[in-house]
View 1 (cartoon, rainbow, N blue to C red):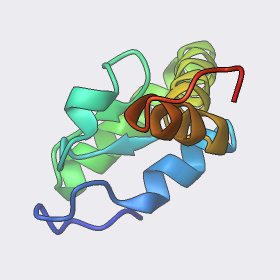
View 2 (cartoon, helix red, strand yellow):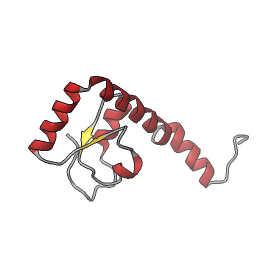
View 3 (tube, rainbow, N blue to C red):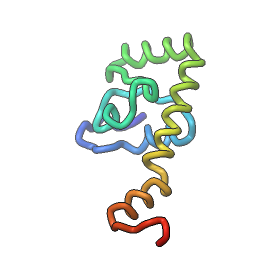
Length: 99
């Protein structure tokens, strides 16, 4: 389960799960709601009832969980991959594709 420490900017467990193509249900902590839309992560209340509701919903809508996992993985690869980080660093440093 991801951390519930609200001051952690971006807990790694949800990113790792998304990068592996897994569906993620978590409280709307840290920067996740800004980085990932509701069609990529299922945001839930951080309670037993919230977890139960997410599990029941996921069991009733497996195709939606797959769609969310695919969309979440695409966003992780777009924003958090090594290639994405290299592109951002190159932009910051004013480097071009030509080196």
